[in-house]
Image 1 (spheres, helix red, strand yellow):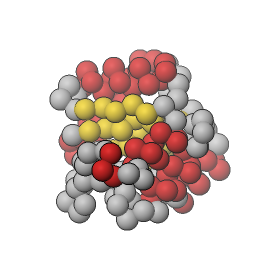
Image 2 (cartoon, rainbow, N blue to C red; image 1 turned 120 degrees about the vertical axis):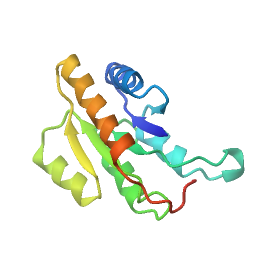
Image 3 (cartoon, one colour; image 1 turned 30 degrees about the vertical axis):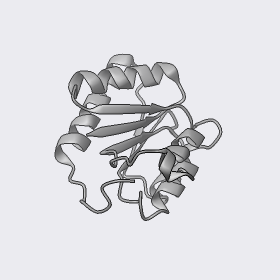
Length: 145
């Protein structure tokens, strides 16, 4: 199982990695630092240069990212037949109703506002991992990218 974390804030990323690894030690977590890196991870132009990858069980996607924002990454993922079935959880500090609505209209599977308190943030991520890694069922369609 793999989780793809797209987060530009090193502090939030480290908290997320620690929480997910402690509660799901056998899960591989890939941390990407911006939206351009996320798009390149999925949509490489030279497929021979990158080995086939399995779908991540879930993508945790920050909204406010440098280079390419999270909404554009979400739009591209949900607009491509190869990646549209991958669950995407928007994990953001934004409490803006417009961000929430736009995320769901673009196909987000969940929208979670990051708790400010570190302990609460870790607890949320542990529960998030539990749901998406142990309870959610993914289709077997296109198991590799």
